[in-house]
Image (cartoon, rainbow, N blue to C red):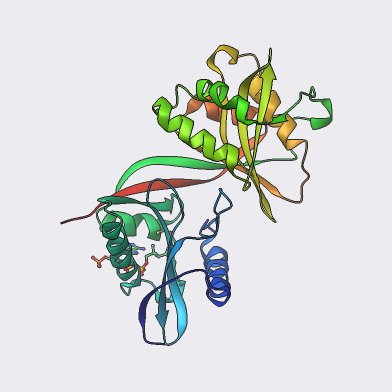
Length: 281
Ligand SMILES: CC(C)(COP(=O)(O)OP(=O)(O)OC[C@H]1O[C@@H](n2cnc3c(N)ncnc32)[C@H](O)[C@@H]1OP(=O)(O)O)[C@@H](O)C(=O)NCCC(=O)NCCS
């Protein structure tokens, strides 16, 4: 194989090569490197691979989602040789083909090389998120937590859930479309808590071999401040055991949510910076 960047679907061979590259970088850099993590359980993605002398030495991945996000890594002994830059040239061509004028490069704050690279290439940090993991040793005693009923959401819950999410920076139609997709999807479980026959709290739970992801957690405005959120999280966690990491992401400036997650036993395990890269014409 010639040196250079190739696009690929996730063929099994390519997937194994990417896995071992990511594992090597995880071990050397001490980073999370969430390259293969697709919280929606989807596998199809755009992936750009960089080969040198037939070996995979760099990868950039664009997980599915409404916004183009890019995660990437170059093998430690091959850095500072423009491989990252070349991968981003391929990413930019992909953005153009999707008529996008920018993308977000995701870097762990702890990665000096990642942040220096993103800034050198003109990225501007737009926001940051903590990855939080449930700490089984510091979290609340789950055996003592009040049990509440969590129900699988039904199509009849749609309007209640639109109402629950009404203050989340989306217009109502957009929100309704997203919730309809969640109700149809089998990639996750959409759980709700009901009060007086109405869904007043929701959370999406996505399970993979080693991880459980909690997303789209929201409590209706009129039910906040009563401990329902903490109770809901504890009841989700108590259905699992230590064999899998329980993870969620939260924007670093969302103090109320951060406080709730900490008090529910979650701890920050890394911080991601999202660098906006605007394409030049
Ligand atoms: C970030 C990473 C992908 C960069 O790959 P790379 O192939 O070494 O980057 P390049 O050689 O293409 O560098 C492009 C520019 O960034 C700069 N840069 C890259 N790493 C840097 C570092 N550690 N410190 C300072 N500048 C750096 C280079 O000097 C170069 O600028 P120049 O062309 O003006 O000289 C690689 O360091 C890496 O895998 N880091 C760990 C994983 C990570 O953090 N990924 C997130 C980023 S997507």
